[in-house]
Image (cartoon, rainbow, N blue to C red; front, side):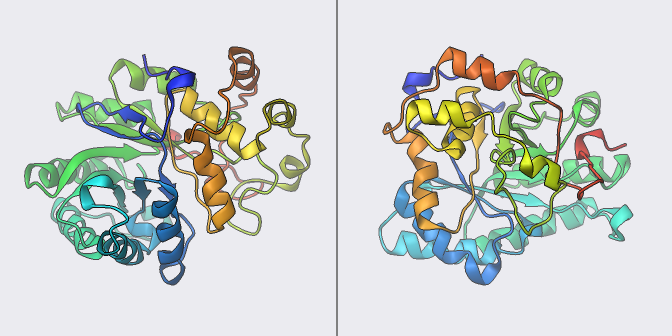
Length: 317
């Protein structure tokens, strides 16, 4: 039910969330962009036509995103209602020496994020990882429900949650997350989890769409090792056949699977090229293309962890 008709994907295409709301199919990701560097790329993204900006408490750049958004509104590029804003609560991870946030601290953090982002309401507020322990993450999720009741956020959801984590919420009788933001790309497709979510109308938002590319996160944290970087790309032939880049093939695949995407770049040409997957300038991938890409799954999560030490938070206790 989630797969979009390939020919109808445009800049206006929205993905349905489980709570009856919807979000833009394409968003602009800001992970690993520093506070002092984030304003310019966000401005470029809004000018290119992106209408969803994804940030997080842990990215340390919410204030820069807020400043860029305020400037774009001031300049008349967008109105507040035009732009969908996602941010995320960092729950505190004991195994990394952090103290988990309480229910009250969760609500307080949401208010702090609102202030930094300079908005009255966050469109989608996510619990970033399920790594604070079962009792703790349940309190934090209850905090998200409270944020929604208080009118601080429109929709609530989670990120990096596996089936067991989602089941806890359901068993507690709490409102289900409207979305789950996950590492999803052709090498890491998570079919069982995605099917479980679809049954419950929990939208899948894909991050690290470009992880299979040899150039992805070079010099930055990931579990991508040299062997993976040297692999021959299976996307080149499809890209050449359509006059697209490999990155565009990867983004298009995710959109045609029905996932919202969050490509991130600080380079104007790439910001524009990523947006071109919804501009009507590029052809749709064929059913054959999609099947060929679907066949590449290796359950290879590489966004967390480091070379030789893979770690997928969806499996956390």
